[in-house]
Structures are given as C-alpha cells and as structure tokens.
Length: 82
View 1 (cartoon, one colour):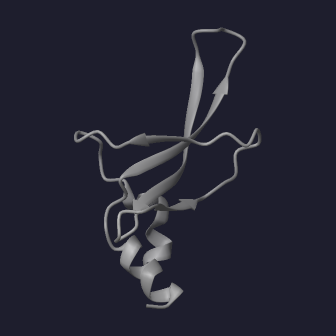
View 2 (cartoon, rainbow, N blue to C red):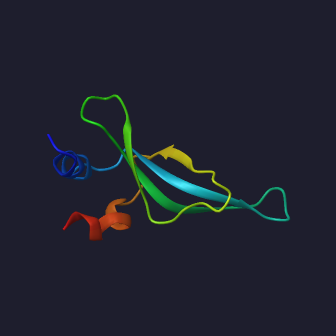
C-alpha cells in the first residue's frame, strides 16, 4: 500500500481524538481551547495520523478522546475528503 492509499484509508473513518491548543489567560481559572487537529488510528493499531489546521505557537498540542455526545467532528477536514 502506498502513502496515498493509506492516507485515504485513515481519513475515511471518524477521528478517535481531537487536538487543541490551550491558551491560558491572566485569570488562572480561565483557558481557551481551540480545536486545531484530529487524529485517526492506523489500521495496524501501531500509531496515529494527525491532521492539523494550524500549528500551536507554543508547540503544545493537547489530544483528547471524543465524547460520545460530541457533535459531528469532520467539519475540520471536509475539504481534505475530496
């Protein structure tokens, strides 16, 4: 399987995790979470493919599993699905 085929295979499924950049504010109890990425598991279960719409300025990417009550998550990467 070449890279193009494996990329298409990975992006046809819903992501398992979403990636966020987290910016703290002057108030210790407040932080802004901006969704910038999604991660799909490789078919062999040995890793993940992460697609990002932006790069975090501080280099920190927080990956979180997607809650079952989360609305549709594919809107981040709809343009990549064509």
